[in-house]
Amino acid sequence: MAVSAKKVVLNFLDSDVFVNTELFDKYMHKDLKMNWHASSGYREFDYDDYYRLCQSTAASYESMRTEISHIFSDKKEVAARFTVYVRTNENPREEVPIGYFVSIFKVEDEKIIEVHQSSHPSQD
Image (cartoon, rainbow, N blue to C red; front, side, top):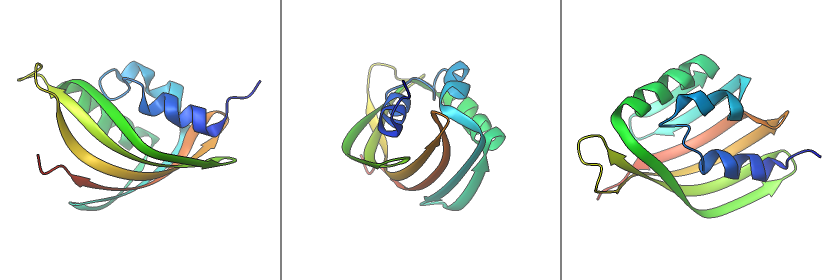
């Protein structure tokens, strides 16, 4: 039985992929295209670029989790609004929000193949 696109995205957002890059291939399609509008500007990532970003994140954080406030799906596309919280290597006892995200994920072959994302940093 095929896993729904919403379940794929929920599993990804609930995973440790940003601190354990061994999980990256489980969630990301080899043809991944990421379009990210951040406070620092617009960036595009392919599979390899996004993997390298995850590697650098993994080196900085003890843990990372998401708190989803909204999630909607329509067949192969999922929209989610979420906050990302981290515990840094320097201060693993304190969890702090680092950003707020709105993302639209497209799922193919039970993996994320395309993302359109907007984010801004936390003010905390």
